[in-house]
Image (cartoon, rainbow, N blue to C red; front, side):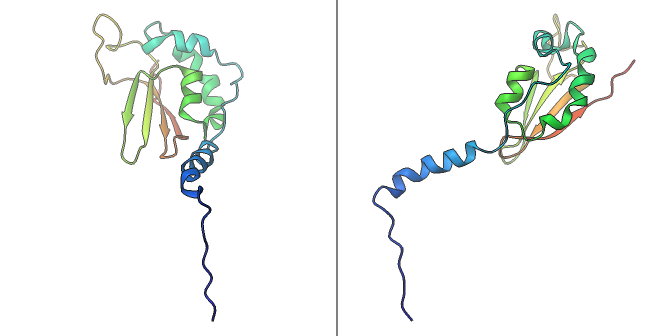
Length: 138
């Protein structure tokens, strides 16, 4: 039985990293605008210290399905830098956004404050896999 061999072109190994990068860059999707959500007001209320985020949360949760498979950069562009970032195993991470003022606000500015917050989980490919919001206490 004849044996067949595959010969790589001379520049194959040089172009392989570029091809892999382009392939992985196609994972996820761009995040569309969320109707009724005030993204600028959300970003301006860093740490929920101005107590505006709780009122902005319902339209965001109503459009929760649009967030799935979005990339981390797109979520950051929409919601701003997270108040806290948690790194998990295997390149997974969680962005936390506070929803009510608390000890994370001046003058205390403590980290890891218990309280209601929006948590966005990213899988190993850097796309949103889960969106959770702690219940808001009245």
